[in-house]
Length: 144
Image (cartoon, rainbow, N blue to C red; front, side):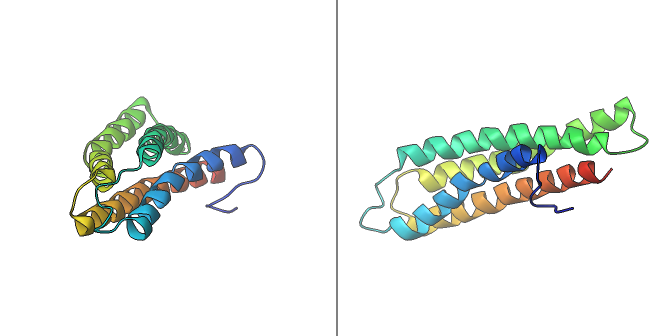
């Protein structure tokens, strides 16, 4: 079985997981290829919306992946679900808010191009970390 892609019905789920990463990659490319000192006051409205929509998709898919991960455990109890959901929300409190605010800072206009590029890189790395955990949780569920 492949951890990164799946055929059949799982293909739609993996498509959603990968779709959530596309705007973050576009944001990273936009800040490195388009952004310069001359146009540091420019913002990309469609990219702002796409990244925020992708952020919401990451929240929903990571929550569903958390439930799939717990479902793959053989001796699960209601407390197992409660612990996993609590850990999910705890992680989103810190990592998720970091990804959100870094992406908002990267896409806002301002003269500090280097800081905006660093923010875009950190937001993309954080989103990819969440994405990797969701991929692993889905893969583990499929292997059960």
